[in-house]
Length: 311
Image 1 (cartoon, rainbow, N blue to C red):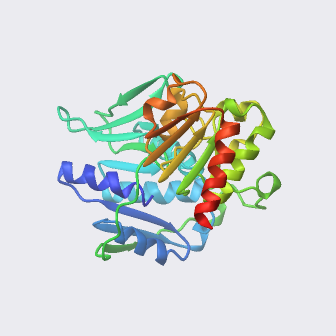
Image 2 (cartoon, rainbow, N blue to C red):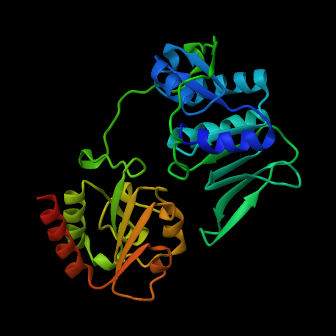
Image 3 (cartoon, rainbow, N blue to C red):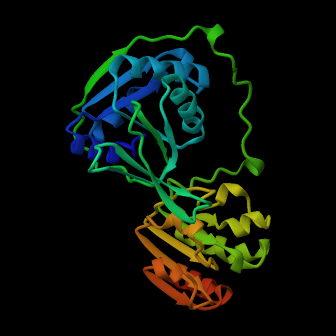
């Protein structure tokens, strides 16, 4: 949500409109302050115990109430598991369209509509979609596509709305939270440094030098779809069209050829280093630095040099 205030500011300025952040939850003062510090003109808050845990019924009802009351032209929703759940429910209630999983946002000059850009046909091309006939225009946007803007002194107008959902209207109940297998929590979107392995690592054991480099860098381990589909590492590590979209300060791609589906998920990185024995690998087209060589020779040498520098 905080990331979306960056393109939201741009869209609002181009349309001569206001940027409004919506915060729904229980005990949300910190989130309200954060939204205010990221450039929102207004922050609308719905706070209640029924919103402590996300439920489709409660959150969709609250959002529907706000849209009906304030009539926004455009609604940006994070393409998180919760956002992907709520967005379609909301668009159906409002009888408007929804462009899912966007990786780019702009204003169409001719019509003034939002131009939503998303991968299509398995990521082999980018489609730009307009919603000319219905309002609001709604889209879910991938985490990591946009960066949070530099915080400013909070100056947004805070509007608190009283909207509550009766318990009998919420048809689901959270019984238990089960951590992912082996207690693994992989925060690819929030990582500053990611070291990823692809088909070139050759097997599960091939991730050992990748993980060793990640450890000395304090990095998160990523992977291409080929490595995940082969069962060498869990899906939680996958970067790309069917995985996570990331934009770290440093992305090191090890044994990754650079299929367009993978590039769609990491090309926004500040600095890309590619290690591949094929000098013609497409990954080198987007890399800032390229090393042509065997990753099983390059990575241990790189890891040792970094250890020396840190020492």
